[in-house]
Image 1 (cartoon, rainbow, N blue to C red):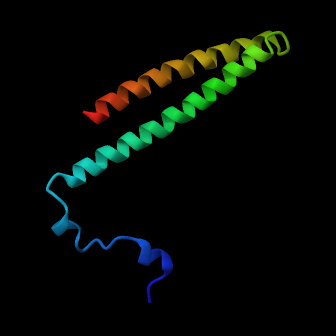
Image 2 (tube, rainbow, N blue to C red; image 1 turned 180 degrees about the vertical axis):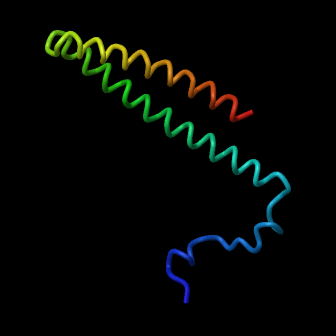
Length: 92
């Protein structure tokens, strides 16, 4: 007897008959693009929150903590740009 979760999964025995020849490669690329989009989104959320914290409290934290936060914002911006470049490469 199959569980409910197993009954929701597609049957793999018909996959080779129904799929075009390049479907596996296309599926792999789509997964790579989705993975890169996820991490790019996480970096954008982190960037916005950290930059918002920096703007709202410029004199409150210790100067060393503030400089680490500025370095974090700039590094996150660099990583977001590189993730965008990787997305463009993965889409081609």
